Structures are given as C-alpha cells and as structure tokens.
Image: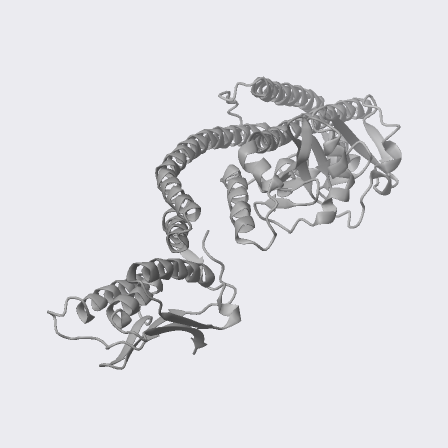
Length: 549
C-alpha cells in the first residue's frame, strides 16, 4: 500500500509539474505575442512619421531663430501632427523626432535634451535602415521604438515612439504568470522587466537566475535557487529580442500532491484507483483545453483576429479562455477605432488643404499689389497691402480661440496702418503693458473692436486724436483699458455715426466675455461728453495659463 501510495503520488507530482511547465511556457508565449502586437503598432507609427516628409523634414530643416514667431508656428504644426498620430493609443506615451543637430519636436512627456544625439541608441539607429527597439534607454523602465528619418538618401534625424512601460505589467500580470517570479532581459543581460521587487538590480547577473542563464537546459525543469528546488521556464523571442525566465518553488507546486501521500496510508485500494483515475482525467481535460487555447493563439498569430476560444470549463483554463476572448474583442475594437480615426484624420487633412487653397489666391493677389507698389515707389500703398495680408493671415489662418496679447497687438497695428492710409493722416496709439502680460492668452480679436470704436467713433474727426491702451492686473483680474480723447458716448439713437454704433460693438464684446468666462467679468465704460471715453475689459487672471492650441 505504501509503495502504491508513493507511486501514485509521484505520478501526480510529475503530472502537476509537467502541466505547470507547459502552462507557464504557453502563457509566456502568449504574453510575448501580445507584446509583439504593440511593438509592431509602434513600428508602424514610426514608419508613418518618417513617411510624412512634408511636415517632418520642414520642421527639422527650419532655420528660424528658436524664439521667433515663425519657429513657434513650425513647432506647433509638427507637434500637433505627433499628438494626432497617437490619439487613442494608450500603449504609446510619446512620439518625437530628433534632428542630427539635437533639434527636437515631441508630442509630450519629459523634455528631450540636445545631448540626446550623443546617446548610443541614437547613433545605433542612424546606422540602420529599419526599426530598432531599445529597452531601459536613456534611463530605467523605458521602451523606445526608433527608426532613422531618410530624405534624399540621407539620414536627417530619428523618429522615436515611446511605449507605455505599464503594458508589461498587464501582459505578465495575469494568472498563472502572476504566481511566478518573472524576469525579462535583453541580449546584453540587462533586466527589462520583473514582476517582483528586485530594487536596484539592472542586470541578470545580479538576480537569483544569473548563474543559470548560460547553463539552462529546457530538458531539465528543476534547479536549485538559493538552496531551494524550483521549476524554471525560459522563453526566447525572435522578434523583440527579449528572453523571459519564470520560476516557481517546487514545494508550492507539489505541496498538495505530497499530502496525498499521507492520506493514502489510511485509504483503501479503491481510493488509490479513484485517485489515479482522477489524476488521469484532470491531466487529459486540462491539457486538451490548453491545446485548444494554444490552437486559437496560433491562428491569431497567423493573422485571423476573428478567432475566439470555445472553452466553457470553469477552471483556470476556462478563465484564461474568457480573458483571451475579451482581450481579442478589445483588440478588434481597437483596430476598428484606429481605422476609423485614420479615415477621419484623412478627411480632416483634406478639408484643411481645401480651406487653405481659398485664401491662398487672396494672399497672392494682395502680395502682387504690394510688389507693384514697391516697384513704383508707393511706400504707403505697399505698407497697407502688407498689413492687409498680415491681418488676413491672423483672422483666416489662425484657428485658435485664444492668442497671446502680443499677437492681438500685431493685429491692431496692422489695422491702424490701413486706417492711417484711408484717412490720410496720423493719430496716436500708446501702449502701456506690464512686460509679463504680453504673453497672457485672451480671446482672439477681443481688444481690436474696442480700439476700432475709439478710432472711428471717438477721434475720427479730431485733429489731435489720441488713443491709449493700458493692460494691468487688479484684484486677481486681467484688465485691458482703452481710452480716447474724443467726444464721448452719444445717447441719441439717431446719432448713427457715433455712440449708438459704438454700443453695438461693446455689446458684442460683453456677450463674448460672459459666454467664455461667465458672470462677474465683462465691460465697464466711463465717458464724459467732449472729453474722453474709457472702456475696461475685465477678464480673470490665472497664473501659467497657456494659449489654447
């Protein structure tokens, strides 16, 4: 009876350990297959970046001064493209392009420094024509998918796609891998991922598995780790160049099996037969479902993403099958969303191009007028044509709802150049702005109608007309005050050229402020007949408020 109990216990132990080995190996393979899907998506994004040479090469070769407005526009266009290409991709943290001189554009994340071009991964990418994957670069817990940007057969820079490192936690965090100690490392032995606390360990030589890397043999499942027997599984990927090793203590696998050995001493021979039959049945059902799940995974790897597992058991394999089906449903939905997003982006780009063509002819026509005026020495007409082009570019070309104050200043100055030419005389416009407020964002064309009212309905008929614009902070509010020395507001409704029209413009400005910022902000007017009119635009002030782009 004791011999039979030991024999059955040994069979049970071998069955459990064999199944555990196969289960862990197939789950490592499954996790690696999903990782490859994410890496291939990141590689496709890098290829898309390199292919969009109109935007990317223009950005890298732009020689405008870094602090100039033209450089700001180029940077905004390139970085908007980099953000749009990874929209709704949670597994991607950032995209960037880095020129050979260290010039960079990025969709977000930490700032890329110019010394990045000295990093080994940057140089290695330039030396290859395809995609390169780097782990733990430039510091720990980073996954970079890079490829060189080639234009006219010359390398112009590097396209960088940074994957979300937390993807690895999701891939290796589900059962049964969560019950094992998993470590993934690259060809150089650098640790890329581990699901247990290895603190400052960076290389496999520092881990418990370090001494076994070179001597590992798949035919031998049990090894001695820190004086304890352990089951070790190793899987190597040909695509991402990672090797994954997982181990679990032998005692945790076989503790239940060895309890059978004690129990069998008091069980009759019939119980021995029942235990053997149960072990056989368990092994057969368990492996059959695993093979079914493996077959589904193989078909997925071959490109058939419509495959779903039909396993209905309530054990761990059934749970894994449900997780597999849910994951494939999510991946399918994700691919559909990607296709839908790409189609929407294509249509949006087409719409933008069509919209840009229309004002293009207007710009060329006015530029032609400016050229003829220059050739004929008509400096005033040349200045008016140039100001008209700049004003149209600001109104038609800039789609942001908010712009910095200095840009509104440019619009107003161009407008006044046109009015000076139209009226045939000069008039004074004085600015008094605190230096730090020039970059504060305000709604586009909010101040210009107030200055226009002051000019047309305040000082248009006055020889010594003067307008002053003051911008300052008052009680946590942002105040823009426009004052003219004209005749003041006219209350009579029949005064069509004066106060009534001015009130229409003020009403529109007040409505815009209330809609954007709510009650408590708006317009305050002070006027004395035949003396002056003062209009204050009161907005909320918030520190470090960027312009909406």
